[in-house]
Length: 415
Image (cartoon, rainbow, N blue to C red):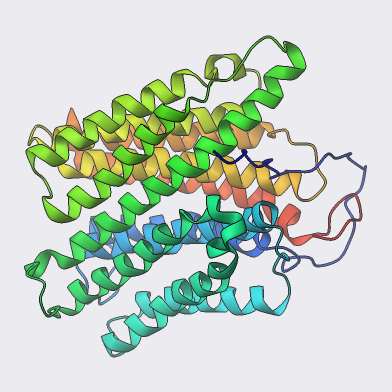
């Protein structure tokens, strides 16, 4: 087995009274994409709530639910993923960090995709598809070389995840456009299959990323207080967890919404729960910027349980989807963005009270959305309330972190 690389998402730091002046948005990969993710999380969900309630008309070609799912996966989530990978890939592979013009180009491509997809009723859909897909294709090509380098073979697992996201985006667009894929008899549900593939690929990425950073940060935190407390990482369990998580992705494409799909999801949920139990999450309650990562992982487990039940026909498919998206993806991306932005800008890695409130708001948003299981007759009001809570959480993030992301590091170092 190869040695576990040192995780460096943050730097040792000291705070200074006054932040330096200047514009640093394109000095490091996390900066523009965490800001774009925050702004999009704040602005896109109110638009969806308006569409859902019938108060907004975007003249969409896509069904509103497909539009919403696409934008939360390939708009918000991919922005957060790209910001994360542009930050950690240089640390894990020692390649030069991207900055300047290439980040401007990537940001413009991401924005162009959002504009095109929102304006899909006014331009040829083939052009919408081409513009939107360009961002992920260019980014994947950009980071592919270090990921496939044999000396960094532990990072190779990110390649199929990124390729799956590209394929998932293409499938979603093909479904919206009503185009058939020669040799594939997926029928009119290819768009939904694409969203499922995108969500499952993101779940795999969370399993990989959380399995590296959460135990590492927790071990470091607990070691300062009591070196005898150990965070458990068991190689056999890790392989079983990842195997089951990848199996979800495969089965959802081959036999979706089936007994097998539900069984695999529940088995994966149990394995993830065992994995989490070794991470000593209950000992992190005094450190919100750490416990939020554990909380996000709890949502991942809950989402897999609900997905399994929905595959058995016990619950609606949307229940598992929203536990995984609002709960797991929302919480973990917010936790990672708030932590990495502080560490990489020379600030104390400590969540401000308002940000702790944002963490709570995201989980409450997920709970309110899932309350439709109990009160389906109030689904419209609950969906709108959930959307407002999510929006408030990301408005807080933008308010607190926009200056952090746009200004130079406090310690004067590059980045």
